[in-house]
Image (cartoon, rainbow, N blue to C red; front, side, top):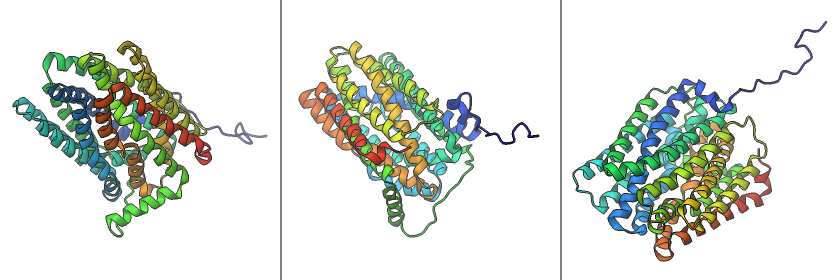
Length: 417
């Protein structure tokens, strides 16, 4: 007589709430909690910084160039950041970068408190913080696979995205009210504190996997190893190129065009900027929850191409909105598409990158995502100044749409799981 399991197929147990499964890991919970607080501070400062630059100068071009100055060192040093993450372990790199960011924001807040702020202070802060981001971003994406299992990686990415998008939804409107009632200083002080909270959380993490790249040859040699590893996987290489096209359209439209549309076209001030960012965040929250709740996703490449295409279309529609009230629901849908796209691309690249070069491959991918941001922001400021925010957002949406069409045109990418 056979036993109850003999001859039967054992079906893997599916978690009841897949999205929440990674939080059972204490290490991931620490990372997630520290990031939640740090991202809340980032969003408070993002609104305050955008409105401060626009109010002091009255120029979208200045806002665009400040953001471009932050993006340039982030892009130039991103690949070196990937090498450093593989050589010295991601957690330590993140810890150092967050401590530096907190110090930089505290210095900017001090200048603001002393009423000595000049335009060059904004540029100096932007350049220094861009350098810190160049090291923390690839380290963060390389650390996650050390904290959760492969099966939980999509949910882990979704929870991290949910962190960002909840902060984008909840805190920009609060930041607008905070700036209107209390001025700019509290937003910068709270952001400085949030970075040091993240430092404490990171210091408490003990990764279960601690892959460290063999130190063979120069940093340039190790960087070349990462590029070769990415090129060997055509799906990863195509993902990097699609991300680069996205980068060219997204940054200028979102970080220059949207605040300029709310402030200069709709005359909605800081509260309008907060509502616009909050609408995008609301949609992204829904997208992150939806992606994290999936137990599996077949044809990830096809899904990534479709959602990127949809993001471009809805971004373009924002440019045609006659009022802020009409633009807000379009931004909600665009945010949903952005979160879904980010989750699929990140998970696809993380799972295909070999552990010993993961920091470098993720740096290449994130350079694709952010690499053309300086050009997008700089041109965005000039285009917004010359033709207005609507033209800027429309052009960005068209470029993103082309990125989606490019991804969908590649058969190998469409078939990728």
